[in-house]
Length: 596
Image 1 (cartoon, rainbow, N blue to C red):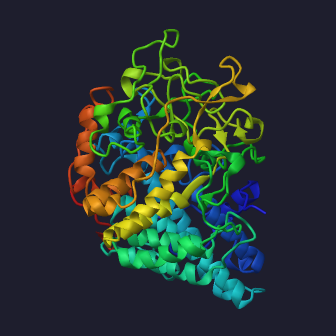
Image 2 (cartoon, rainbow, N blue to C red; image 1 turned 45 degrees about the horizontal axis):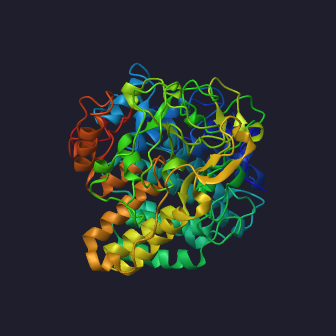
Image 3 (spheres, rainbow, N blue to C red; image 1 turned 180 degrees about the vertical axis):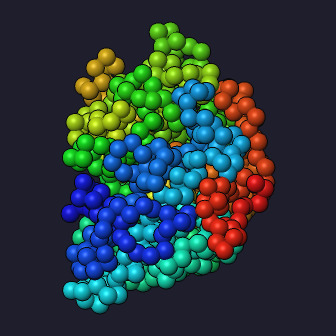
């Protein structure tokens, strides 16, 4: 049985937030009491498990209605990090037009500061999850009707979730206060101590204590915890420690529902509600459409803006992939990427061309992942017909000619997986917090860091071989006028992608290998909220984004004034509102990041 969020789970989350435990008042975690339950009301096996479900439910940062947990718009706390990872990292433009959601424009151009309310929303949402976990762990020792083994299981799942929430906070904000169940009498803790070791400890305990499989697919298992721990090590450049874990994961790892870890045969299966929770799903937020709540809070509410404008989806024209990203999918005749000069081999676009005017798509070689990631003129947009170009774009001159694709539901199964309970659509497509392709590329990075270049090449080539499978190619429609009639066996574009030749990484050296690995992450994980955090941790954000803005600003008008200032932009600012709320005994407990 899947771990399905529902109206019941929303009620559980409200109970969690409303527990009358001390220490939440007048702090950056302040939450008004929403009920009168005492700790005794939930200190039973059923009560603890209900609270744990509420802690899982907080993963998506959403609640019934239009606001994210703790206030703010749903997209401000989207767990996909489409704003903070992909728009900020150059995968995508904000989209829409210049007047819409200006705080996102600040983030897209590096011109954000601590007063930007989006950061405050994201901070509160992540700490809301931590509050829920801390309440569970504080109640757990005295819970009745539970065996020691059952308590250990709950503790391990709870600490896994707390590790996730802190991992998100750490990679976004840098300086983060550590608050656990021993500190609930005083949530005002300083943020001047590195919390990476504590995050490691969360995932280590979960990896040691969780079972290999779970009865509900949405619950974390030991292998998900091990993958998260290994990813944490890579973020810290602890490659030897990470390698030990990757060696185990790639041989014996399995999903919570018992499938051995493997890349799915088709790349696109990771972004289709009909094929979710397959062998590539390490840990995913379980989305469900039409759950009976009359809202889309459990159906990717954070992505509700990210559909082509003036299209069958109704709203809203945000999250438009960049030309620079599209160019990255250009391949040589041998099926390899242009690692350095891909912008010199630009993919043809339809800028300035009306949808009623003729346009022939690019005919030179491209990686097929392009057309499962980006909607572009003249290429099938899933099974909705060929993308018509300008007719589906609010303002081409502002944000370019492209549309997002990984977050969009198919036409053939929309009756089951589309959610129309709001002014913009929801869907049942899972949010993959970690998928196996991510794990393989992290493993490649660790091996390259240790100068094991053959092993690194092997991991990268697994990803590229899957990309080249004929099944992953976008095919032309049998009849463009009636796309639901099916597809032909003729690819819609000139798709050519191949693995690196055997021994290529060793022959060309470590710097080349790292460049290839990093580029592969860009291609494979594009539009999945990862890019900004990758280029920051690699120490290349300044040069990468400066080059991106220079190129892309020749095409669109939305990036005027973009600038990266290091170390200021290496982390997002601690929200000013949280600093203002952090005063204790007349002194603030939260420090701001450098440069703000």
